[in-house]
Image 1: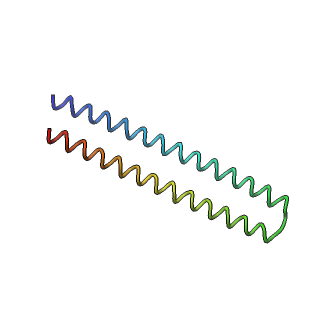
Image 2: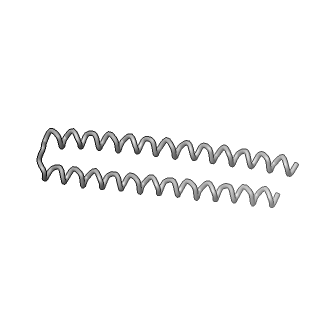
Image 3: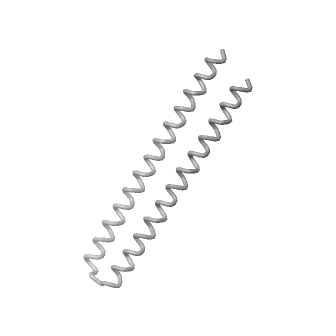
Amino acid sequence: MFYLVHIVVVVVVVVVVVVVVVVVVVVVVVVVVVVVVVVVVVVVVVVVVEVLVEVVVVVVVVVVVVVVVVVVVVVVVVVVVVVVVVVVAEVEVEVVVS
């Protein structure tokens, strides 16, 4: 019976980890698409406007946006991994105690 419970726990943990990885990959893909769209829009604006000062401002804004997005994605991934590790540890402790 203990082995059956352990197998179920392992399967649940694997499913949770796979779901978390898929969610993180989807978030990263969405972020990359958004960044590419922003860069394309910025390039179009720069070509249309052709003003050096505005080009510098736009580039700075794009860099700041990309940095913020990357930091947010990294923080989300770290939080998700920590939560999964804590949940797995709690489940394993409960199985061992049982």
